[in-house]
Amino acid sequence: MSTKPDKRRQRLAPEKRRSLILDHAADMVNREGVALLTMERIGQEAGISKSLVYNYFPNLTELLRDLLERELKTLRRLQFQAAESATTLEELIQKVTHVYLKYISERGQIIERLQSEPSVSSLSDPTEYSRDGAVSYIAEIVSSHLEIPPDIAVAITDISFGLPASAGEYLLRSGDELEKIEKLTVSMILGSIMMVRNDHFTRTKVLRRLPRSTSSAE
Image (tube, rainbow, N blue to C red):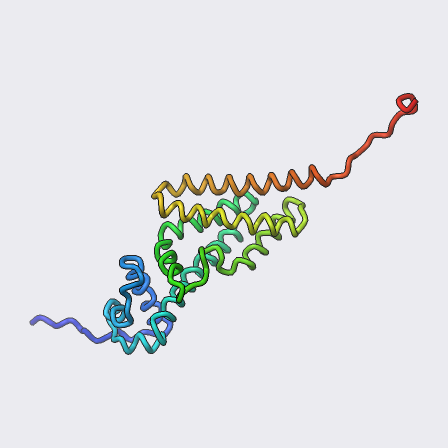
């Protein structure tokens, strides 16, 4: 005697259910974009009713905002963990850049499509999320490690943040090898930091003069 599958909806904790709804919404954004999304279609994809989706999100815009927030927060957390595990400045830049580009290669289309919606996001690229805190964290390390003034460290770090964003856009657009783009990006960031450091010391270091002998003074 065959048994029919139990079609009753599985009871999940609210946070788990909310996360699954966002997972399905992310899959749909990745496949189809944002234009055709509705709360009803997301519910169908998740195997739940439209009314249950509304229990967790008041409208589609808020759902998409929460999805983008989750994506960007995950990316920033992974970058922070990578930075914490680094033992040299070069390793820090390499690890943080690798995490960023790998995440963009896997999830970048979702982020890009969400950020292209004015009602969902005012950010132009993923590096703008919690940027001030991330810049301060890395600039403090750069300033201490390279012995350059904090204001210069903040400036060069903030400017350098644009390189991974450009690299990520290029990676998605060109389909080039991640490892190749990663190496180029790390070289450009490290090179610019070291050039600024060397320029700063060349311009500001006080000259050391040897005492002049009596004969040479005559």
